[in-house]
Image (spheres, rainbow, N blue to C red):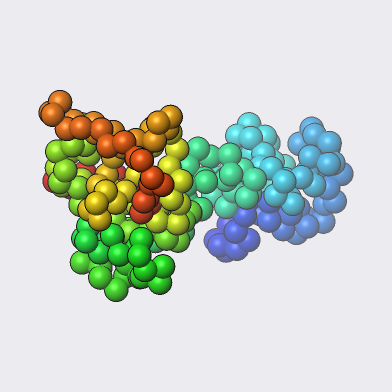
Length: 218
């Protein structure tokens, strides 16, 4: 069995290629030993995809290394993308400012307003938009969706809520979080208290931003 004390190369494909070359084997020779085609060896070495577990064991035997060492190499980018969490893990972490409702209202009248300037705290999230802030919701009118002291991340770069989505809107200069409904345009409560009323929009809705993420704070 060959020595495997050297950490490099890092990827599975690089480990296959470097070991093969150290044995003075070409891809066709290795393919014959393993029982696959030469293009299969080429694909593994270039990282197009990784060998499956059974084939990893055959490769390890043909190369005189342990299957564990071979499998410890980094997976190819394509294989990593197949993982359910791959897209999520690639998103950059953002530190989103937590601001008050009165500061959120300023984003309607002042296009240059910066939520970071009035941040009371920060929350880390992974989301595509760069125009985000967070607010604490204590509004009983939406307590079925956002219980008291839920932290809601608002995308103020998107002021066109989807039908049935939640948004932060200014009603009489007061920001409220409600469910947006079309035809007719209205802001609906979602509360255990039936006394909260739907707000119908007679003019263009003053949408501050759309709700993206909610985090329950205990």
